[in-house]
Length: 236
Ligand code: HEC
Image 1 (tube, protein in one colour):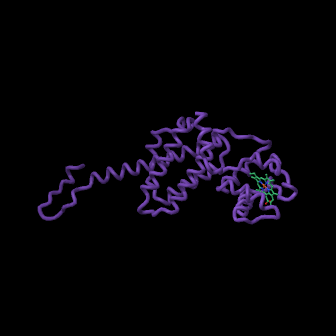
Image 2 (cartoon, helix red, strand yellow):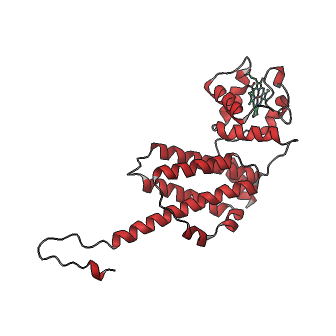
Image 3 (cartoon, rainbow, N blue to C red):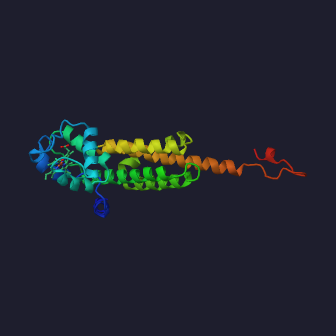
């Protein structure tokens, strides 16, 4: 398991979370310093203010030493996750390095959810439900097989019982909630809750499809013209 995790980490081309080791030298362990005597003290900024500053750097805007930070921010494509991470660092005293396993799970989840949100934004609500749903199902399956903690928490009976029929808008809002949940998770226990929600969402979509297939197979014959025999009563 450890081997797979490390290999997968190396294979990830995009760094979504800031590698906090580098920040410490200028900003201090809890972001309590004015970096190089120039930045604001990040500890004390809200998560939204931090995100706004990062988005600014991403657009190429900032203070007199913005070039330094533009480099840092360009490594992380997702400023939501990065801001959540920095904010959490300002709130937890000392420098606590999360485990490799946790960083891997978080990066994988953030990336996957980011991509799915993106595809839903581009999708046609009427035509593309199947495509989106299969994307979610295969991502959920991947999450499930790589995470032993998640496996323990999934109850297939409960999943079968909770199966609302979801439209595209509802699926988008669920995926967004789950991504926010992942962004704000800083421990294994926190993140596994979000991932359970994601696997349950995939379960609901599977049930929806099963129901549709069953409904289709029960449809009465199409021909209703002269001589047609109504066999629907025999199909019940
Ligand atoms: C070489 C020193 C240096 C390193 C390393 C560095 N920063 Fe900075 N940081 C700065 C400076 C200088 C500024 C102010 C830049 C400006 O003029 O806009 C800044 C600004 C910021 C701000 C916005 C605060 C403000 O002034 O509005 C945030 C948030 C931030 N850094 C986070 C980070 C994170 C996260 C990392 C690590 C991934 C990091 N920094 C690494 C020097 C550094």
